[in-house]
Length: 436
Image (cartoon, rainbow, N blue to C red; front, side, top):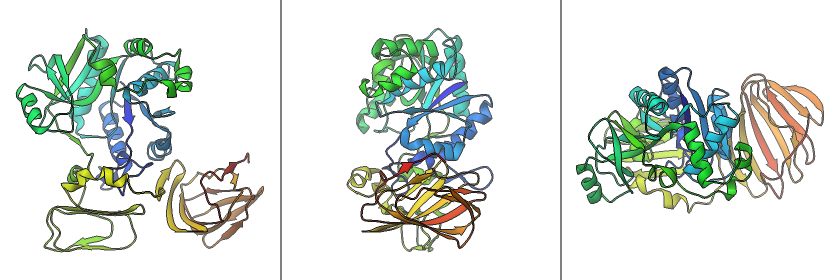
């Protein structure tokens, strides 16, 4: 099975754990099979692999998420990077071109597209595999998954099927409605549009060339910013005559808000927190190294990270996005392909960061024009290279690097380093990479 996972998100609805770099699908708060925690991305990858160990998985995403994907999945998946955001139709076209021109997938092969973050059981991925089979050998050009609705939701678009059969033709599509209208749709047998599509690769590429001007993957990538910004539903699904919908009645949740996300949490408390006996239906997530005590809290979510603190009624947490958009603050925590960083302190002329470097990884060999830096090794072993001179480093070692000094550090074991940046003009743009 060839599967494209669409990974986007602005990181606003699960603030302060999510941000512009770490969207909800990367937050490790779900129980895994070994008693630990995994992210939605890790869970979906594990579930796909269990259903089809030979599945060829490609994640279509923006530049900011590449390091996170590599951090969590390494080289087990391919990544198709969007140069900028152009909505789902150009993103799927770019990924389809990537499959053919880079991965060597034949145009007669079936491809399934789905979001990277559904909270589902194995039956969902069995249905994806079934859709791939239908796309490969069926008479329709495009197959969709329709989720049997459990309530009249305003958050989803609706598919009106032509019949109540498990696989049906499509009568029409409906936009996200109000509750009263959603009730009418459901009475007509409507299904939630789950954003899942299956097709033969050659079909999609033909449709891509009809709407977008490009020759191949490299050309589409280079001209991507010029492409029409349009969703897959508008550009293709709602126009296709030979289309079928597969009815899916298994567990399906969109963990897009704190209210729904808390329902899937492994425990009411993650991190240093305590609830007294008067608390009811309250969830706490604490990434800070300070305790949180909750007393008399009912139907609440409390979340604390380096990016901020949220204290909210669960229902009200669904309306967080416009308020978070008003907050101006740099990203305080991010996972990278080499490890992670956490901003510990911000002053006018200094910035203090904790760096966690994974074994076998290293920072780029680089220099800064406008700031000095000091590294203090807290734990682990590794090597530092300062202006071409290599030295071993371990706990307690302090390394000073004036502006202009070329430097890097690599980890033999997990390496934790506190980095202090000192200067009048501290900026992420002040970085020049060099060959080592």
